[in-house]
Length: 404
Image (cartoon, rainbow, N blue to C red; front, side):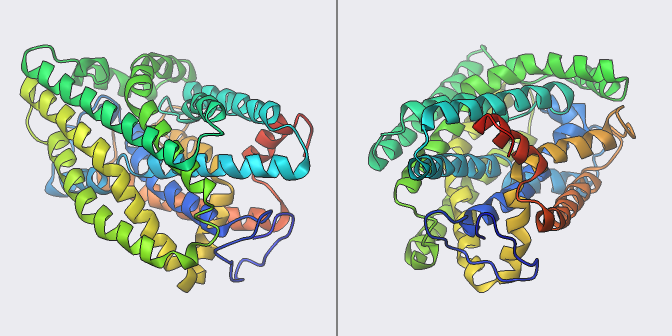
């Protein structure tokens, strides 16, 4: 989809693009990642128990557990990695775009990161403390410092960072077995979960206060766990962007097939162990087991995420309707990401219907899919008349220091 031009919604969208064009494969992957992200995030928006790392005690039917297991197995810790990969890949495109236009890249990118930071803080305080935009704004500073890093070195750094983080989790698991369980730093108990539900169902002041309170633990999670994983995925995206891997995706069938052959079996085995460690057992030994499961998932989730991406990239050239459905929400990824939290807040918190803790896991997942379908349709309509999504327009204004 060319910049500055509009296509009819039913028109075929080319998967690859030349320099200066939007690469539809990137937008389609973003759209696909949005679906996975809302399926995961909505559980934390719908219940204080999930934010505390617990299952809602009043939903214990077999179907409830099947849904929890499915989301943990196939969705958790996969799709934010895909988004992070695309953040790193797009970073290389922005460098090239600045070079072609003759504009200084660093000041422009710093303004972009500042914009992401401000949007992320507002998002975390008002709507969803699990925001990842602030993380991207910090990781972006590391990418800026590493922008001249060769592709091989970027991949080596990503692998080393992932291995060190996994080793740290294995050490925490060992310490938990010895009686020094640190899981309470990022998780809560049933009493805290019930208090969170009451707060989220209350006034706007109570909701914001609860979000700020939750940030105390989420900051620890971001700094020591998810943040390094995001950086590793961004470095992989940086390496892929060096080779413009997504610009000629139709010519990489053999590589994509190998990613599938390795990523699916290894990734699914790791995800199965992670899901089992999340939803079985209790006590200190379970805390140790869960940390070990997280370490394994940290090592294998990137492979499963890559297998998902490879499968979609192989489907896109032969499925123009699928491409056409995923590209519009992907082009408005920032708007839709923030919109997901806004819609969920209106459904579950005291901002709107106040249904926090009242809906079953199956109902919650159904709402997540409905939100994505609504956004996909709305994005197509919006892009008929506008070049950017609302949040993208605002971020572009902040980035360029002038109104688009």
